[in-house]
Length: 189
Image 1: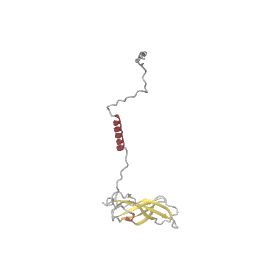
Image 2: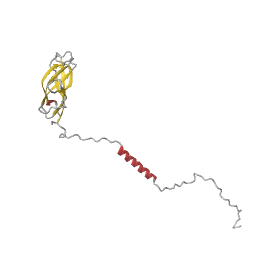
Image 3: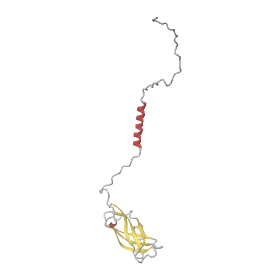
Image 4: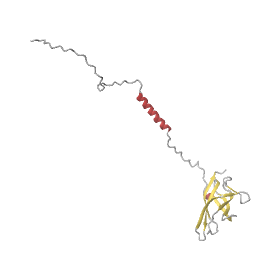
């Protein structure tokens, strides 16, 4: 028995070169020296801040003025209309009502509007018209102007005129019911 058997010698072969196997290799990612993800996050934050600053926001509510800041406004009770007279207009079915406006308030009056209700023979309202008061200037009753040009100061009186047209057929030819609806004014000078 041999303790050292001789086996046949097989020549050793050189390993064959195989094409590289893509599945077996691990891809090694080289880390760059520039932090791109951090830059992308900072740019996104800057865009968000710019949008918040430049987008329109809800308008801020301004507080209403305090009672001391709002001047006292004229009311219909501040005006008294006296010496009312009716006169037909020279042309058509129009009518002039003239009188005197008394300012009994504490503010100067720059304008007033009235509503006149023309009644029929049985007392029903046939037509209602709203018209502004016009200030009669000078001695001639045909010269009128707005009260805004020369406001009626507190405790003053001025002549006025109101023009009504398109009067109804069944009107009873009595003085219409006149109500002051709107008064405009300023603080006295």
